[in-house]
Image (spheres, rainbow, N blue to C red):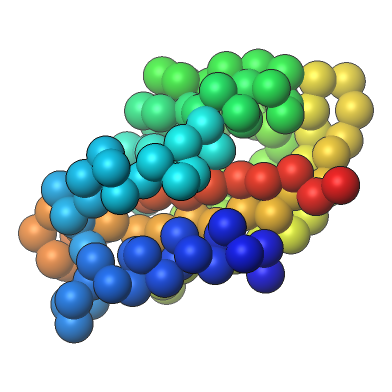
Length: 138
């Protein structure tokens, strides 16, 4: 596992503080600075059937060649393929982090990436956001 991905997972674990899931409010902006640009934050929609990118980092725009801020994952399938939707649904179903290393579509080519998606819950039960990070594998 990529060291930057591992350190974000470690932060998520620390923010859980013995609870099943941390909340978005548990993360201060300063906490997330080491991953800035590589982060994405998604709202969970329709009980985990779909998701909306609230934040799509500038490094991700550089890696993939497009900005998904404000878009639903289902709407972005022509650009990103079906795997992300399946991964985020898996996060909601398992209530656990999801780590992948795979090839992903980018502006007219494919790139190798490593990615983590972390469930967040405002009420400690319902997953309402997913925090993630993506890094290119060279």
